Every structure is written in C-alpha cells, then in structure tokens.
Length: 152
Image 1 (cartoon, rainbow, N blue to C red):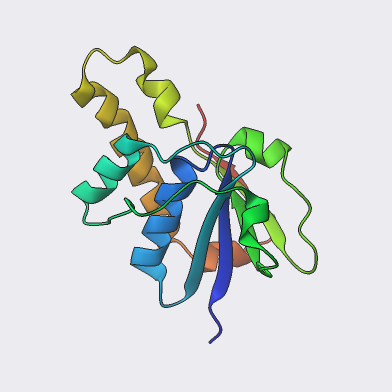
Image 2 (tube, helix red, strand yellow):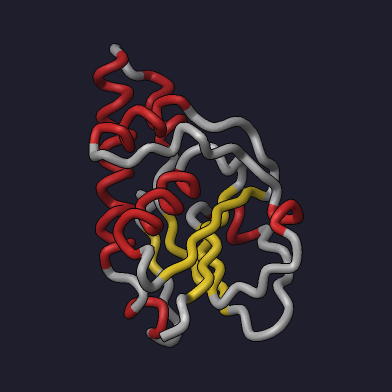
C-alpha cells in the first residue's frame, strides 16, 4: 500500500503543525508520509519541543518552513490545523484534498499563564488532542467532508 502524503498546515509552522508532523511520523510512519509547513512561518516553539519530548518524540531538529519551500510534492491530503491557515490555504494542484481540523493555539492559551507549568499544561492538552486525531489516520482522511474543529 502506498503511503499517503499528508501536509499539516498552520500559519507559523511553529507548534500545532510541527506536533502533528512529529506525531504522524511516530505513530503512523508506516502508512503516512508526513510534512508540515506554514503560510507565514515563524520559529519552532520550544514549549512544543518540550511537551513532545515528554512523550518520547524529538522534534528539536524540525524547523519552520513556508509551504512553498516543500517544492513540487504531490500531497494526497492537506490538513489545516488552524483557522487562519484554513482561510488562507494556498491552491494545491491535482487530486489533493484539503481538510480542516482546527486545534486551539497553545501559545495564545499560555499568554496569561501564571507559571511555566500552567503554560505547558495548555501545550499538553492540545498535543493530546492532536494525538487523538493522528491515531484516527489514515481512515478518517477518507471520510467525505471530514471537517472538525476543536477551537472553543
């Protein structure tokens, strides 16, 4: 069976899409060829690295990249993981199916945290929500009109 090429797309490619790529490579590497990118890349979020390391996944060598930096990869699916990326998703030629699965933004949630531990708790919650989604792959990709949002 051919691996499904899946791009996880968010705005900054600093947190949610990076965690998605790391989890997909770790949990579903036998059936998914995972990528991540952003529409306006920033830098890799160190808290995302921390919470991923807690579950045995090292994304410290990842870096933020623009979707154009990926070159001519023919993706089977593009999964937008934030509302802004969904609203500003570039055109993907061919048979690429774009799916929106929104997750809350850990850096935004952590802005008013009273401690580093509280800030990390937001990252952990979103990481675990992403993990639950990744565990449903690739089967959930095949559902027509699959579109969920965990933005609250």
